[in-house]
Image 1 (cartoon, rainbow, N blue to C red):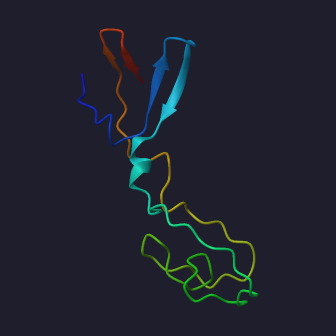
Image 2: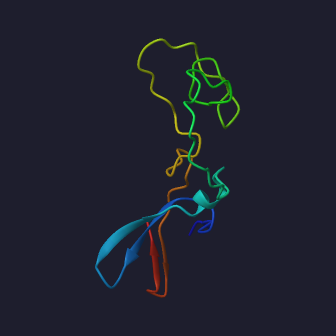
Length: 100
């Protein structure tokens, strides 16, 4: 059986109470947001914010720069819930935790 990092990689677990598989992504605790709260602005925001990581040409939260797009642009999520390199394996710990 493959050793799995249940605290760091997304996986499915079997909920024995409902009989359903649920998606668990424990690595989301590593997201960039740290609980900062913003106050409501009473002034009109600028039409261009040089610190906005979604704007054309600006740096993303994860580091790379956006292309100089002029129309609709699809972004890769900087902190995705599902990771492409997640190992595939099955686990059953005495029926208490089933992972697939």
